[in-house]
Length: 560
Image (cartoon, rainbow, N blue to C red):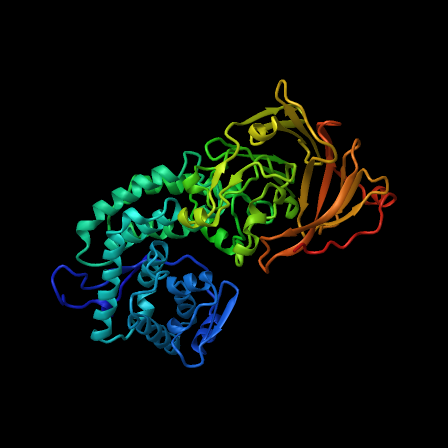
């Protein structure tokens, strides 16, 4: 439940029209680590994989090692770790750090960025009981004065906020501000109305986010669930749009989860801590079973026994919301029980700029790539990237079809996209057939050329890739037509393509919690003029039978 502010937070009004006291502090659902409190107390700030040691200086005066580090610092989410330690020292440390920030000049561009400012407002409201515990009147007034100044700045800069998640975060922060601070009642209706309109626009009818990034659901629910509680704690009915959005998003969380609790890696998805997801799902009162097809967001899911297949069956999002979107149309991920088998490379939690171009490419996904070209085109010019605040998708699949047929002993999923049609004159069609017992998956990838078009050139011009999870041990079969896969639970699966040579090459799994990890990928190459389709299968096999055809395992190297 949201926490009501204690009597120590109640103060007489010190000037008209200002928030004179904190009425309530919203709950923070993000995970905490009390051991981080001692690091912060000693002047070591570890954010986004970078360590800064202050050596007696103010952390806010030190040149940040990266933009990600600075964003984390100025968002003040780290205050929750100090609260988790729950000691007089950490409370005093938190208050001293906040007071140090309040003393800084307000010229930092990152600190004034809308999404960072919204995050800081939510963090300071949530952790106010920590910061204001035993605070004197002077600090209390100063804290609220700066907080209301930031809220006012955010309220009147709405037109400059980028579309997508940043805009929602700002509106969520403004709703929190109107509910948690006194003398803000006049803003509740307006903030609620704007948030409701944005939720209806950005959260699609099937529960996905318009950006098509599964991780956005986690980010938003961590704020929307406590916001719902905060409305209730103020005896104000939550807006129906908020309740509807949460009810739609919860089944979508389950849709993207594999058997080990991890999320499928599509469109910028990074590692989602299983503890955070479990916390969110504990708030799901309905516990509804997700649909097998998410038609508005554009994803398909097949469940057969212990086997789970999740496929991307949708076009890229609108350009303004595509800065993190990937060219992974028709890619899929596969898991058996708690074992991941086939994955996409994903996006690292830190150091994203180093991997961003590769991670967004079609080659980083388990699908077909033609002429080493992605199915989407991204903005490339540096000046244009700066003007557009990133690298949005400017061209990609516009017509994506998906068809599912359930039969007695298997399910057929037929997918196609036209991302290569304008440049190369063909449509990629993928047919996936999953046995109901979960023991076999058959696939076919077809390059269906337009009438009058022809495949030109020579050599191998297309590749079908299947990126393996790092926990899978892979070795080529002696006949060169397949690969044996050994899962962590010792299950053995055999991948085969009877009409093609099958290679085992280096790959990288970017979404690991400990940073990028080397892994392998199964690759089938051919020339479309010779053979414009690839038939392949993945079947559970007996270890003893597969071992007779096994060659020595290879050790892939992490690509540069």
